[in-house]
Length: 484
Image (cartoon, rainbow, N blue to C red; front, side, top):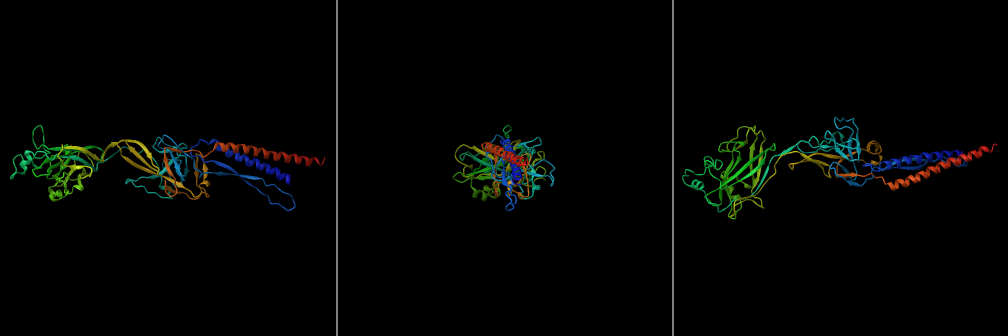
């Protein structure tokens, strides 16, 4: 009967608008929820099969919820470096527990990036979900996998301890005065036979110089270089120069200060690491060809590839001309590369005062963790107060063929559904995944003006549906009254 179908259509209108009101209420309630995606109630007609000549039977309306999960909210600046927002497509991979994850443990996806460091050092958002990423291995490499969630680990910044970086490169910018007077010891060394007080790197060296007793040979010029060892300890290396009677040539010694920091092999003593001649061109630059011609007599046969090698403290006794760190230091082996021929300086011999203009090294002493930074490609980097940086992990971004079909869960997160398709794990900024914004959070996509307008229209539609029921009731009452 048509009046009965009208009643049912009115009831379906009440039900559908009630569902639309629930969606609007959810949106308004979450207007300030980080990363929230608005939901809308969408209506579709329900048509009953009609028999020709039997009148019309109303089917009514059906409401379904549509989730605008793929709609991106605006990124807003914050003051916390662990607040994260995604500019573009994709979701953070999160878990409900931080440790002892099994394959059967659920992985969720969210855009809510308000992460904080918890008491165990894990990154956890306000819903209690833990951020996942690919860890950095001991070699500093990251192995990504687009489809294996088990390779992800909960990112922990609290487990990062202090760090040190051993010195590997030294750049010198120094000048030795070309008009320096030749010392008596250097003159005696050039005599045949050498004089009694002649300079000799083995028996009467600059490393033996003691100003209090007058033993050894006083250098014409000396510079010191701070060196960090494998534990972040500070060592000192001195380079001494003594002008030779041969023009543009200098005797040179490299030694450790104090001398007992190293164990020297045959031919070296008093903390010496290397000895030899340094030659300069007539225009004051380091003479690479002349030093190559000197061969073993040169401090470095190839100044452009000048290196010093220290064996580890626990190594065997060094051979002739070799050195090792002292056993009492307990430090690892080390290779120091010298930049003596830099275009902007290097080691020079001009007729001006002997001076050290700059000594640049890349080593650092022990440092503690000072802050954590996350870049736009998702690398989580620990920054230490000694200037060293260390990558901890890379955040994984999950994309879906149909993100609007993901299943909503509590905590502003989503689960995979049949309609959403299989996830694809990517690094931020690659393969269609959005870039990461540190110190930014994604705002809710709710527009209050649109929601309040929808609230008014839904209320009126609900009233209109109730009016259908009232009118159909009155018509039924008229029909019943015919019998009287």
